[in-house]
Length: 238
Image (spheres, rainbow, N blue to C red):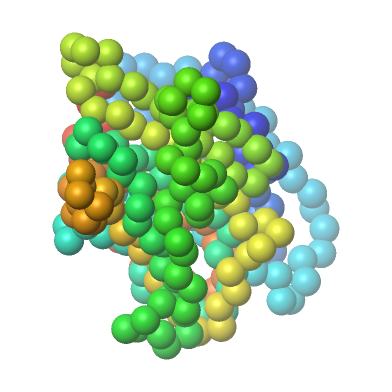
């Protein structure tokens, strides 16, 4: 699905472009692994870089993938255990909803610099965080409306077709380029998996949520959780 933003672009037909600044001081290495060993993969790539001085206070770029399938306690943890000083700059969510109702009432919560019981920053709802409103709904068609902007969007909606695709899925992004979330000591970010019941009560959902988060921080960083297996990474689309 096409995505037009400042940090990431997905263009026809299979052009994946990333513009996050990734500073390095001594050397850099970029690898790509084909975990589907039963099929060959053909790749074309171009990497642009500049050999220049990097300031002493320049932080390194980090990215981390996590998946909750399904969520436990109607909560997905985007990132946890970050120690040090840095700034959070981006969120991508692939969200498969297992209910036939509105799903995006959950709040995103940032816990920073020692805050544990109550979040330092608390959002007002999923569609608000991704810079949409009122269910991401087109008021004329009464359907979900995809949108893609420089800093935020819902660039993909996979709708049920009455056969195998029995749930609706969404691709959402939010880049904190002009509004980075700064932290001095530590960072944890979660998002609730909540919708509405017919009588206005919260619906505690069990969605399938995958996330990739982006941040800059001074080294060293804490150990990342292990990536899921090949089967754990697959999102069935048959």
